[in-house]
Image 1: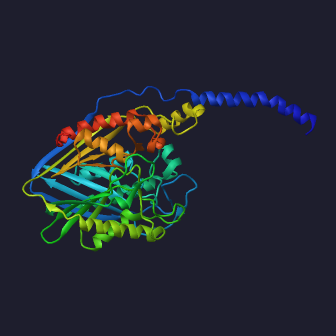
Image 2: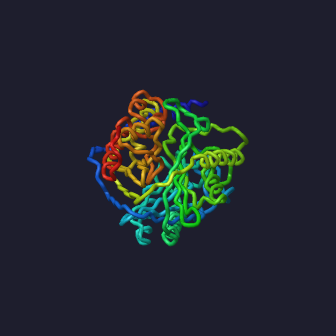
Image 3: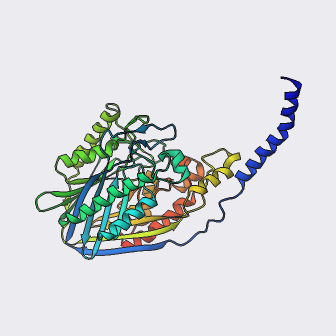
Length: 438
C-alpha cells in the first residue's frame, strides 16, 4: 500500500469511527417513548340463548401470484402456484338475538388490518361480531403485514394485493355462510393422543387433545370445528409452492367424508410440534392429517340438549413496552427495542366466545402449553385458542421469560405480557360469563 493511500485511510479513520459511534448512539436512543398501562376495555359484546342456527361456507383464496412463501426468515422461495388450493372457511352462529361469525384462514397469522376489513364487510352482511383465526401454516403466502419485523422474520415484502386477496376470500365465505343458515343441533366431543405431539422447547408437554364441534342440520352436518395444537411446519421450507400443510389437508379430508365445512383452529401451539415422521413433505402432511381425522372420528360428540347459549366479547388490552433482551446481544438491546417498537402496536385484542358448554378464549399470538393452562386457570376457559384477530408473537409464562427459557426466547415482549393479556382475558371471560375458575 502506498504512503499516500495510508495517509488517506488514517485521515478517514476518525471520521469512520465518529460516524459509527453516531449511528450507534442514534440507534440506541429511546425512540419508543412511554408505554402506558391501561385498564382493559370492553369493545363490544353480544349474548343470546335459544334454538341454534348456523351456516358455513368455504372459498378458495386467490393469492396475487407470484407470491413469497411465508413462514421463515430469509431467504424465502417465491411461488407461482399452489400445491393444494388455500381456503377461507367460515361459520356463522345464531342463538336468540346473538349472531357471531368465525373465519379460519390458511395463513401463517392474521393482522389487525385484515381483521378490521373483514369485520367491516361482514357487518354489511349482517354479522357484526367476527372472530378471525389462522391455521398457522408456514407454507402459505405472505405479503399482508406492513410491519418491518413481520416482513423480515416471516411474511416478506408488504403487498396490498395480498391483503385484498385474504379479505375478499374471508368476506365471501362469511356472506355465503349467512345465506346458507339453517336450524342445527350442537354436538361436542374430544379425544387425545399425546404421541402425536411433542414440546420443541421444554416446559409443559402438549397433551395432543383434539376437540370436535359438530353443527348438524336436519339431513347432514353443516359444519365441523376441530381444535388442535401443533405447528403446521411439515412442508419443506424452501419449496416454491404455497401449501396449506396438514390443517388444510385435514379439513379437505373431513369435508370429502361428509362432515360439512370443516374449520381448523389452533390451540396453545406455541411450543407444540408434530411428532409424526412417516413420509416426507406433502406425503407427511397428508399422513398426519389422516391420523388426526381418525382421532376426530374417535371423539364421539355428545348432543347439547335444550336452548344453546351464544355469547361473544371483544376486549382491548394495552401492550407492555417491547423487550428484545432475549433476542439480541446485550450491547444492541436498545437498538433492538427501537426496532420492535417501530413494528409493535400499543394495544391488542383478546376475545371470549361461549357456545353451549364451550368457553373459548382467543389470544392474538402463540401461547405455549404452560401459558394456555395458566389462562385456563385464570379464566375458567375450556380452551385457549391462538393466532386470533392479530399477532403479537409468542406468549410464555412470566417464569419462563424471566429465566430466558422455552419460547420466551422468541417473545417480543417481557414478562408483563402475560399479565396484560391475562387481565384482558379475565375481563373478556367475565363479560361473556365463563364458569368460575377453579
